[in-house]
Image (cartoon, rainbow, N blue to C red; front, side, top):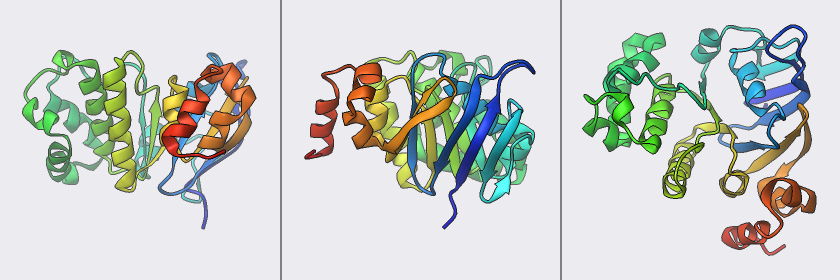
Length: 250
C-alpha cells in the first residue's frame, strides 16, 4: 500500500535565495500520527507550509495519495484532502464560531451545513458558543475551532503546526486527547510540536529535523529513548517517564 504522504529531497524557503528546508524526506501512512520535532530554526514549520502549498518548493517532490502536489496552490491541495492548521492567526477573531466554520468550508459549500452539524456534535463547546466571537474563546478553545475549520474539508491528512503553543499544561493535555480522538476516527496527522515528549507519547512514528533535513526517524517510543534525542530535545530525565507511560519494557 502506498504512503498517504511521501516527501522526498524537498528544498526551499521563503525567498529565492533561502534554503531553510534542505533535502527533507518523510512519509505518513494512512491513519498514522507522525511527529516532527527538532530545535528552533530547524525548518519544521517551513516544511509544513511547503507541503500545504503556502510556500513553493525549489526542488524535490511532495506526493499525496500518489499524486504530485509540490507547487500546487494551497486551495487545490486542500480540495484533495490535506488541511493545514497554522500556529498563529488560525481563526478570525471578530467573526463568530459559526462564521469561522463557514469560512473553513467555503471550498465545498454543498456539504457546509452537514459538516458544521457533525462538528457541533463532535465538539459541543463549539455548538454552545456558535454565536460567540472567536476572540472570546480561551486558547485551547481557539485551537479546537482552528482544527474544526480544517476538518470542514473532510481531510484524510491534517497538518498541525505547534498546536499546543501558549496553552496551559491542562489545556495542552486536553488538546492532545482531541488529536488522538480525531486520529482514531481515521484522520492521519503530521504534527510539529514544541512539547516533544508529549508529541512522541501520542505518535506512532517521528522524525527529528535538524538544519532542514530529517537526521533521525523511527518509532516514537524508540526515539524518546534515544540518548541523543533525549539530551538534545527532551531533557535527559524525561524519556524514561515516557517509556513507563507507554508500557515500554526497553
